Image (cartoon, rainbow, N blue to C red; front, side, top):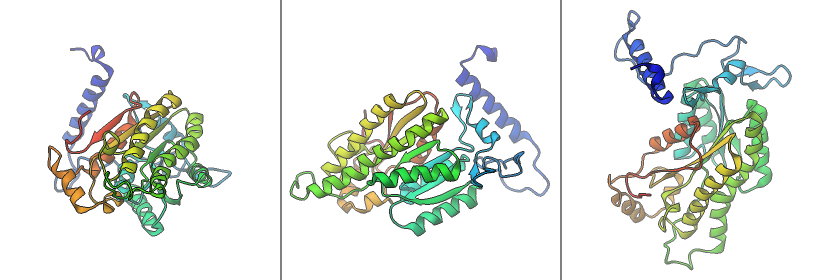
Length: 330
């Protein structure tokens, strides 16, 4: 079979597999022991500008900005976008899932803005770990996503520091467990708070980031919703409605921002070890896990890997992917 007759995506996969086989056949240097780490990133070659690849110093501002090599890396590579040298904003980046998303993107070579509303020390520690482990630029940024001025300032500060903005991940969320039948417990104050963080907050961020991405010619936005947004379930009516709104906002923004910016959504099921589940009753957590086909909570790393895939794609937009250990089917 001739390679030129294959589908471009299939040909790309075959060529990648062949490159991996050739790499694995190479003799290892003397003294090397043990098996090679299959997921370890190869060392980055030195940039021609003398700075770390993907982060040169701007001659006027002194800020780190993507060098020419990093800009070339944003070009389409075999049907997907190379994330090396990109800049990602992750709201809720110091949370349980947010940290996993930050690590997954940094592992691909993206610089990370770890956005937090509380726990500054934790966010700064996450940024330091990202910079040390993956040799990328990372910094913590405070932002209350319910305040329009704060959101505009965040996008301006990130663009000024890193020189561009390629990826926005809306992971910040607020949650409080209130049984559906307890309408007295679902106060208007709680409803408005949940909507302000979970739905209006992402809208503010998308509106602020979209012009920057459009000017660059491309961008990626990933919203973190929940299976509670796909049916009448979850920790409260307000939470379920907010996530349903976020899923539909994803579709609407995909239409509004095409073709430059792709917008997708991840809808996790129960995720243990997050701030959202910390506010849930134990019986709610047990019931959610028991109701899945796999009898366990969803995996945060699976969700983070899906975010990376949505940032790399060139042909997927307006979609919601469910990761819930087999509880919801749509």
